Image (cartoon, rainbow, N blue to C red; front, side, top):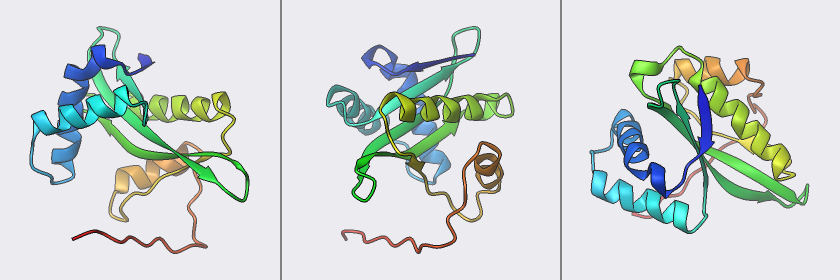
Length: 148
C-alpha cells in the first residue's frame, strides 16, 4: 500500500476516483468540470490531497483536506472534506491509511486537529471514524447556509 501527496501527474487517475466519489454522493458525473476543479486545487495549493495505491500501483482512493484556522487555539485546523475508496478496494485498510496520513499532516503543519462531517446514515463512516480515534461532537450544532 502506498499513500502519496497528489500532484498534477496524478490528475487523470485522481479525476476518475473523484468522479466516482461525486456519483456516490448522487451528483451527476462531469469529468471535465471535476478535472478542472481538481487541477485548480492542486495548482493553487488550496487543498492537500493524498492518493492511495495498491502494491500494483493502481489508484484506490483519496482524501482531500482544506486548511482552516482555530482562532481560540491560534493554530491551523484541517477540514477532512473528502474521503473515498473505490468499491473494488474497500475493506482492505485504504481508508484507515488515508486517515492516518491525514493525522501525520496535522503534526507536520503544527495543526491543532481536524474536523469532518458525515451523514447520520453513513453507517460505514460512522463506524470507521471512531475506530480511527475521532470523537463525535455532541455539544455543538452544525448549520449550513447555501446560495441559491
